[in-house]
Image (cartoon, rainbow, N blue to C red):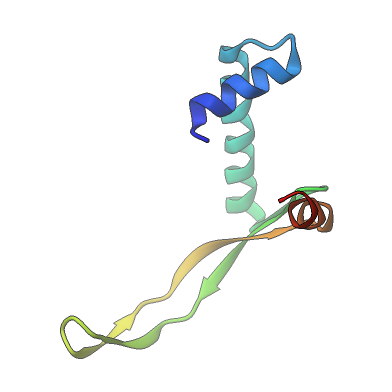
Length: 94
């Protein structure tokens, strides 16, 4: 499902929100999630899951293309852990 179809589905499901309003709400939610991740490093959405920032350490890898060792530097990555309700829904419905 692409973003436009996602907006259309929510608009139809709500029966009273138009497509433009759904887009505005979506981008507002995304903005709040990103701001909170940057501020505290973690956001919990009940019955959906938890987003958190994880600091990955630098490590050495063997690059098969160049046949040499490379070092991958430290970086921050976003991890998502689904809530139990979401995991059970996906397991049972799919």
